[in-house]
Length: 317
Image (cartoon, rainbow, N blue to C red; front, side):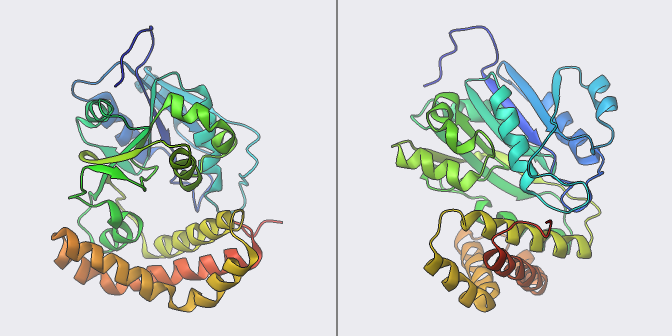
């Protein structure tokens, strides 16, 4: 149970700016709406909001004036950021910088494409009345458009409501929170780069518990998303995922994943279909988006294949 005994925030919310995956000089259109949702939280605990960003993000100064309660952390000398090369690994590095600066006893993570529900913060704190080291929640789609549904199912279909409240082995950094003391115990795992898979695994290996709750909800809003962007993002994220895995899997498993890459789109799509059927909702949305889902997963699989073959997350030298 969380009991606040000292001055300062109970909750720190870290908002990662991820709209720059393809364009390093991106703006704050999505971020502004996320901050608006966070500053209008109902029954919010004492909290701080941190936004780590690099110099290529345009419009931060206007947001700094509009939201003086938000702390904007400009991060320089990022090891994984190149202004001339598309990528997403610097998002994990930015998260790590913010976690090092966080003052809350609970640290929550979301991103600029995500819009928390009005009681998101309150429900996060309530969840820690139970003995969890980390807590996640549901992720829903906020844009009723075919391409958005396809991207949503590919990215977050595993977290669509209804999620079963209770222990889990998997939470997403789009809607996750951690006890500060649990993070400190595994600080070497995330201090330079916050990889959700490695962090969650380390907590479980140390005997910690992950929980997930259906009333802790973030909605994905990506208005104006284009087909070419979605395909390119899937490739980049797939390559990054595989490159990160190369750091902890052996040569044999790496070779196996190269071999099975051609059938991966069908495997991933089948897994999504089973999840939708099990949840009992959004079946028509999934069926309508299924052709697009397959194409997106082909792009992801090509990215994974490239990542396993090269061991790198980008094409940069």
